[in-house]
Image 1 (cartoon, rainbow, N blue to C red):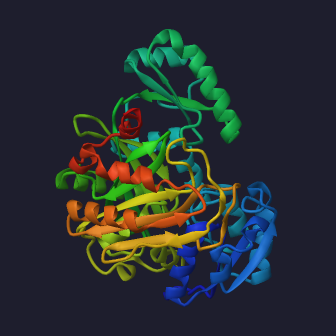
Image 2 (spheres, rainbow, N blue to C red):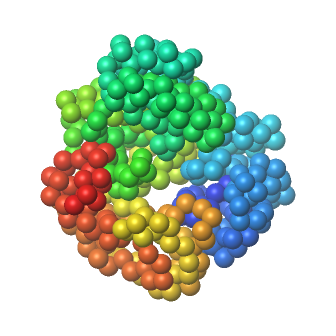
Length: 451
């Protein structure tokens, strides 16, 4: 049965990911509709799309998070599908359900799968059943501080309390001793409730200096699943990633295939479709433990595109059209070379305070093995209302050393004037001997800043 080709797609997002989706649509010959807030009237994605519709004021709740405004724009423009990008509504099962009810294809997993994977405690239980390694901890949501104390005694301190419905470090508390647990349990619940409208928390063993490693997947609507290798995302500050690379310097071929085989079974059994990322922590012995699923495209997807030669965003669209991975992928997935991504944020590289404002000068680096995903241009204004990401700088080489050298060269040639950016911080990271040697863990930035 032939797949139904999309004629027109609405991108329910902004910034560089909106531009990225527009690029994929143009490659496929699909018309695009951009939506924008009043603050983004002159943003690049508005200019590049075939049509653009204003959906409200600057505040996200009244524009990019407004179901009614986005669905109204989709119906006005008569689109076949909506691509949510990442962030905003990308993992909102209710929004995916509304799209479905309106006869508009949501380019992502089905609503029930998003719901299951979005509740971390349920996702952990499912992965445990499927034989994917999971950190020791509570079997479900904790009912009380007393239950948390009992579980912590079984697991052994330190432990970590986590919000079941969220991420990004919110609703998360590390507990070193039993005497501190009741108060931290209450704090985690309160923060989780405020951030995610759910105070549910669970408990697991805390790994003090883990590596953060995630696996990219693609799954079609015919039961086929492919794992596109892994990414190392250990360079992060307050659970926000700064540098990502693929493959991980710590990964071995046998471990990669072992985890990939388990994920193929689990993804197929869950009925998961489209793109997604499964995140793990690696302890000091090299063992991997599942932590969560991101049911969307990731910010760092370009490093995987470099080492596999697969266009992940284009694949998302073709999967949503009903195409098989056997037709989408060029052949067996193979990892070639090495890629590194630096997130260029509009923020002070010392204090990390946001740095919105007018960009008075903007020069992109070039040369072999360099890619820049951005929405910024000279004389544009970076608004203060949204994520501070202004560009993603990606460097590729036949090996990790070459990729590092090309990234250093690209950072030196990247000019952004008028606002502060994180470029100086990235230059420090790339020059550090531990980074050069691949000795990474999630405490890397804390150690770097302490110096």
